[in-house]
Length: 530
Ligand code: FAD
Figure 1 (cartoon, protein in one colour):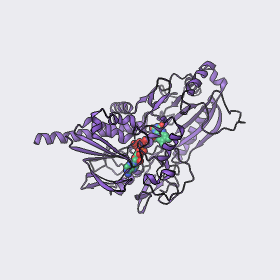
Figure 2: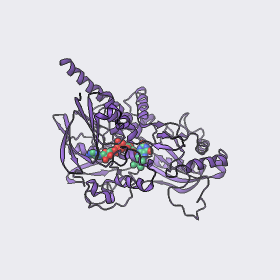
Figure 3: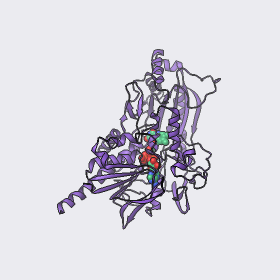
Figure 4: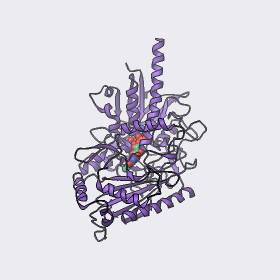
């Protein structure tokens, strides 16, 4: 018998982790997952990078672009009076500040973007899944517990720690980086393969993970868990309903019919990204002092390098290169091949380097360029640096100005300080060294505009105590609301330099376990009194 209803707002990897773990742990619960965007693929939440047909892939990306969804916009229930912004959003995402009526205001964070579709950004992500280390970790979660949470998050996301490890080209790249930085990096934190989320296929390609793998059995009609799970797409949650510190459910707008209806729930989980989750809390009158504040992302410096034949030949043969190219030819639609990194370590390397090998550059290289058609291929590589959390870096909401969805519109204020500039300069210098060790720059190192990381953190940060500097307790419950959980990168309270999704799913595992324990305790207590 169903005795608990759990409403999950947002169908990205984090909302999906909550749905799965709560249904697995609480046998008398059902989950209603509400997603503002459309379902893109027959398997809910699948990574669109797995779609083989380029036109179909492009269409799936465009349908995810909310107010910038072009011809699909009106069929998605979204007003059409919008103007394209000056920045181009990454495929599958839409700029928050796109410049039209109802657009957010983000002049100091102009590249900020979101995805609006089943699977969230997790239908478009690159699937890099490093773990935080040293001060990137959350100080009030003990190491042993943290390792276990990461292991469970890795299981949910299908993390491969040795992806493409058999690539001789990838191995040669690591050897050249190891030579360059020999003696400068602590044991275990030198060049290595980058963990990624996906399932290697027999032909050597990867089926990239999305929210689909996190939902897992919930999408399997044969699984009893599927009977207690319902995913409603094009369903915009307008309000979290609550009274006297108790959450009673959510108010939803069906974007097809524009009908507004309630979903009563014992527990509400809001995992609707680092801007729209705090906006929903604000619109619902839930306004902790830290809500929207302490915004961080890791600044990004990127470049593209043509691999040098003489240097690479010291560690890989022509035959090995032929083998790599033959393998790449089996899946030309997927630009990602060997992926390497140098992880964050303290005190001397407080940055993360990501190095992606590809046989062609990500942009049209002039055919006359000496590095055009480089047989040994290219690497796209970049450093992520820290951004110290500050109250003043924030998304703030205006009750008197509505956005295109009718929510209090938001403005982002953000600045890089001297601390960040110093680390950006140091990382850029290292990027030059790494590039020169590997070959010739075809795109010089450059700092991307604020917001480019797509990894927005801190706006609903976790805290050990309710001292006004955090939104949620160590189990992701909003302070003062035991039945309201928040999830996503917004909860990360530390200055990190890497891709945050694995960390956010690990935080969700902790929150889901505690919520399941409480729901089960309530059921047991009710059973005892019957
Ligand atoms: P999201 O995936 O953002 O999902 C939130 C969902 O909530 C959205 O679908 C949205 O439509 C929905 N929503 C919002 N408001 C409402 C509402 N009111 N009612 C109902 N639904 C609502 N991360 C990594 O760790 N590694 C990477 O390599 C990486 N690469 C990336 C590459 C790209 C191109 C992109 C776009 C992202 C990348 N990311 C990467 C980021 C990663 O995808 C996110 O960290 C992750 O998806 C966050 O999961 P989430 O569930 O918290 O939120």
